[in-house]
Length: 117
Length: 111
Image 1 (cartoon, rainbow over the protein chains, first blue to last red):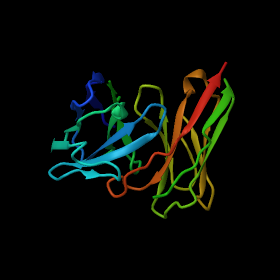
Image 2: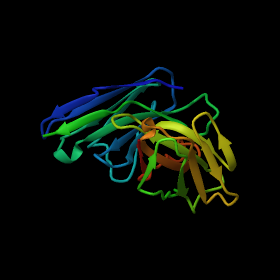
Image 3: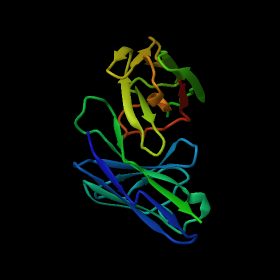
């Protein structure tokens, strides 16, 4: 299993500003995934972050809006840039279980709830 | 990517068995079927995974027919604390093909 810590757990932001969310894992992992969950909705994958290379973004998400860093195998950041009220969501960091017997089992952080005014 | 279809919501009384069925007609040969549970204000949590036939753990059972085009999550004797959203996902290694969450099933357990 993996323990994932996200910061901040929640924040209220002003329109036009940017916020960086941090994700710390208690073990080394190859890939980290960033999801967004809008109020009352399911999870949508934003991007996959590999250490040492640029993140891979899903359709509808771009690097200028959601820049991602992955400086080492236990840490990643997601920045939500030039925020608007439509960016109000829970942002979740996730990693794949590297040692378990289940294929592709994901562990999630508690999420970062952003409210943009 | 294999798409999944689940009921949007279900209600159950405490102590009953709950079965949530998921359709995944386009499941690929290498895909596993995985179910997650999500409580409010928390990230999803792994419940169970299977490839074919039946899998059982301390939390739930997963029934998968031979054609693998659907699966059923069975929760025995639910309690109020089982009220959550349940997601069915199909896929293999998320490093190869990122896992896609469907809309999930919102289970409400009432006393």
